Length: 216
Image (cartoon, rainbow, N blue to C red; front, side, top):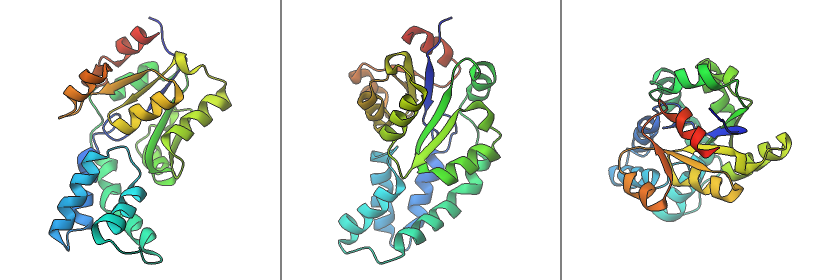
């Protein structure tokens, strides 16, 4: 079975079943004003794979329509991390993920590219015992596109021989901007979008190795 030169993975919804945890965290973070909490939840769901910092800026720019006070970004970030961190440590992995990485992570360099803050992301991956599977774990403040470009450049990879596995439009955009073939992990409500985009799809990671071999 042929295999890509390298594989890039989003984390939430691709490796860990953690999307709902972060959705609930956005609702809870702004729960003092319920209509704001619901609006931010909708915005989050419409922009999966986008940095939480961009979403915090949206809250002040578009919802409250006032400048963000000094120190508020740090406060929101700290509270959001508190809401999600312990729950992500215990959430299930996407079906087939553990078996895939145990079997295939030595076949080529694999990377995590997420919109989560990089220090927090690395703590989670380390605590989950997954670090040994990855040549790099990258998050914000750099964009997904920039992190992929940096990894491709430093490793002298051929983008057309790599693959990006994601579940959000932001992942697909990063793959397109770097010339890397994309595979979508299907999540509820996205089937029609990926079909119209003509993107390869997998329901989980059970069949990912086969899907990757078809890209090669």
